[in-house]
Length: 504
Picture (cartoon, rainbow, N blue to C red):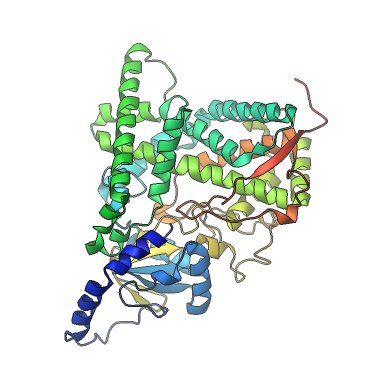
């Protein structure tokens, strides 16, 4: 997430005088005697009054926090306004949080924006740990994201990938460069729309609404860290924007659900999508209310479109930066192919392709700080006391580049995964792009299925280069800020059809 921006800082400064007075009063009040049984808190950099360590976070939190952790250690405590935040930056520390003390750290922090967009935490990703969360996560794992369900949507992935390849082919005929960032986002949007809602939504208004939703989920909100300054976002317009987006999303989902109910009456034997499954569960068990159905659907969009397209965007970036890897991957794919278009049954033995995706996730995890956790109780961790209510940010980006865990960590080297280095997603804590433990992402199989078929066909059908005289070493890797990290600049490339096609 982007912790702070310039407009928010202006409003923080407006409240400094009042906050300083409040702080002085707290300092002057007598303090209680220290508890001799307590351990010290984790190491922490010096903080400023009022804002704490916010000034040290900046617009690329995963990078600045990695730099701070190199000074203060893999378990570091920050003070963000009135909230404590634990920054975890090594595989060992991540294993302690996500495995050894998983139950203690499996809550989610409250967020004003998330509460508005996700029906007061009625979704899987943001719901507090408890019986409701266990029920809806089980529903998602068993009913929506099981291996059988993921496999049932194979035809959707193949059709949408084929359609994407046809559009790229048309651009080739016109000698037009390809905006891969837009193309890949379109692919994942179409797949998720068909799987979740039953049809594609390509109108501009829907795409704008989805974009606003995803941006707001990763948006800094001052009230989350300094609650009594919640009036600031009434002045800067953020509250009104979020309220309007939440209302538009709710109206859109109401219409989708109504359409599905009508279709159930007229076409009861049609192919069932996620909305159909959720409405069926509601009808059979009465265990889901409408807000929960809407929240779960929004989870699918947040995780299924933005993060999946981000992975593909960074894969193609790294392949264009490393033509020798591109060539090796194309050789593997083209040796295995039986037709011009690869179907999922053709991907089984493409080990180097899987390694390329994993290596990209190591260097460019879609959500570099993962979704934040929160301590449900006080915990003793690696010789330190962590207070209940402390937010926990696990820096998967830093862990993936830690020289203590990886040889030549800055080098793009897919071969490291052919040697089983970090091979188990979510089990080897050097490699946790999807998180791990109770709060690990349940949609790994869904995301990887989309990434693999798209990448295989992109490198099979076409040869790729940068436009004009662009040199591979000059291709930037600048990032956006937000919950999910994309390229700052669109990825533009030129595709040339591969010379030796296979008919049939």
